[in-house]
Length: 313
Image (cartoon, rainbow, N blue to C red; front, top):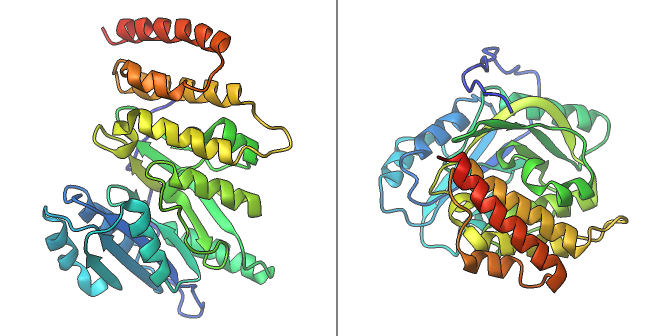
């Protein structure tokens, strides 16, 4: 893992040719009380200077300065609304139902795009369209910004790769797809933590993505994100989604899925310099393991906790 330079992406200042019929790109931003981040998010969309943009913001009734920030830019936003919703997936689905672009994607209100992202995505679209391919999805590199910085690298992968390495395959804000690629609702409304993982697995069932080796977006990781605070509920939901999609020719056993989730749990909490959480968490993610397997993992769990204590001293 190497340090990422978040300022090393140079802007392409060329104007968009007026002789090209640039596809409409629709971007959805769900938001709730993200006043400390959302302005950078909005600017990263508008500063693409893309000539055929539809930007939609669905806010869940923020009580901080989010609304005043949105109003600063509302002349350049196609649609925005602030009202109580049923969570992030519901807000994103509402936005996608309104979208009219040939290409769609969503950008959370604490993440941001890097320069030239829309130009790169539109060029892929135009190339595919010239080859009579109007039904596809695109992934690029996504930089992760947090206590440890890393890069989700865009590269070919199988469905089994997602099942095996679910937390290190795709960076959500660096994903785009054609509007006819997958039907509505785009996200499973009942999911609070693993809706993007579920979407990637459903999309991979249709066809592999087009991978482009370019840094397209930055995702923030910090203590109050859902990823950081989800604890056992998040991992139970991840297990549910992985199990639902575990239909590959070479299936992962329940034991393999559980082991990978356990390893990821350790990575997540160790990287934040926290002790692996309370027994209730461990009890719930392991409740369906057979006794002999669980006894071995009890030992690993205890040793892991001791190791984390040593590492953070």
